[in-house]
Every structure is written in C-alpha cells, then in structure tokens.
Image (cartoon, rainbow, N blue to C red; front, side, top):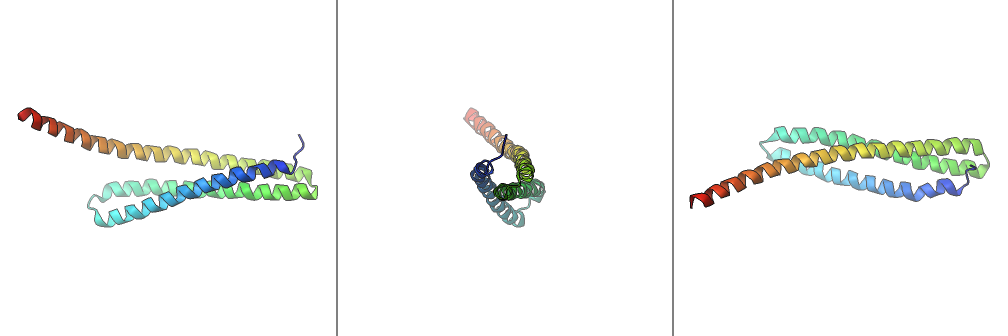
Length: 146
C-alpha cells in the first residue's frame, strides 16, 4: 500500500479530538486536586485524603504521559506529511508507523487511567453506600420502636 498525503491528514481530526478529551480530563483533575487540597487543610480525617492524593498523583502522571504521546503522534503526522510532500516515501512510511505507535501508547495509557479512576469512584460509592445502609437501619429501628 502506498502512503498518500491524505492518510496522515486523516489522523489530524482524531488526534485533535483526543487531545481535547485529554485536556478536559486534566482540567477536571486539577479542579479535583484543588478541592481536595482545601478539604485537606480543613479536615481532621487526613488519612483518607492522603490515599486519594496518591491515587490522583498517579493519574496525573498518566494523563501527562497520555498527552505527551498524543502530541508526539500529532507531531509525527506533520513530519510524515512533510516527508511525503518532499517525496521521501520510505521515511514517511516509518514516520507514519511511529505516529500510529505513539497514538496506540497514548490510548493504552488512557485505558489504564480510566480503570484507576473508575476504581477510585467505586470506592467512594461503596463508602457512601455504607453510610446509607447504616442510616436506613437506624430509621428502621426507630419505626419499629414506635
């Protein structure tokens, strides 16, 4: 298959949308960290907050790596298009493969970060469910006494 100029150009919109999603994740994470920092300063239960901070630091590093590989993929697409324009087909093919590999790595890291964030949310939900179960039991006890 011969690589044409339009092939790497197709990745532009996909990578741009992916980078937008990554940026939105980063901004949401930044807001969460700022809120957690305020809660840490005001709270007496700092042990749970410290565990959340460790989780957020890991996720923050993953998002940084996702963005790095996404930008690298985008950059390699531009280089590939330049090489195709100049007529260096073999170098363009190698550059395009490298771009696709960077995109694949970025998506894989995104998948891992999604797993970690989902696990953290499930822990929060189970904590709230425990509180709700205790409250519903105490309300049931009150009703039975009456």
